[in-house]
Image (tube, rainbow, N blue to C red; front, side, top):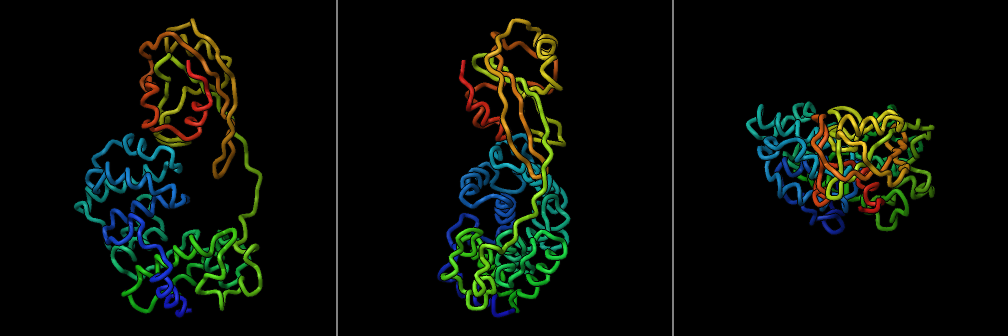
Length: 347
């Protein structure tokens, strides 16, 4: 299969992407940051976040010395917040244990929080010109289509096979490993797309089994569907004219470390909660509603009561605070909370 690497390297010269802000660099910090942001997120979405992030945190030491909440604020809206927390943890570890320099050892990269085999392979190829395979979603799609693999790529036996294929297909030398790695990513992102692939523009079409047998709609196979459980949560959205009341989520679990709304077991205790925590019993119920969202392993129904309170007294609880409406844009809030707030009428 070695000829694939030669073809892709040639193809990339004229048809690959060359002007993304994290390209044309061997700085492992910039490469690592882009790879983490690009996990399960499209390039168009990442571009804005990436530029803001490196402006605020231009190097590993500055990121390591930042408060986690400041990192989460800049990540707000990008989703999959464990990536941001692991990013911060890795920055601290590299700053402390590696003199602020990324380790070039593949195994050491792999030991860092949030860096899996494919991400470590990408950093190795782009920053250190080492022959290590990658296997992100785009690359899985290229290989399963090219070889006509009809089973779901996430199945352990299939994924093991794909890693072996990715390893066998590496270029013979290290010289062009960074170009080949980028070419694989680009081919999957721009040509071998999940829907409406541009097969006529593909450098591999002459021997692609899916192209020859008209299987591009069947391959890659979708993940087998299963019924997701539904969880329910009950939030108080408390408006005090210029601010909303927020509660910091625990360091583990849903929206870990972000600011959400005070959560109750149910709404029977709304009056008691407001009295105990805000020393208020004079409030107005503005709206009752429900917002639906989904995560990888479950669906979530967010029930909320929208309440107006004249005062914004100090709280008894340490993990709550008032955030001014003018500051919400830059606050570390979960996307569903932002969406709910955008639907409410201001007071």
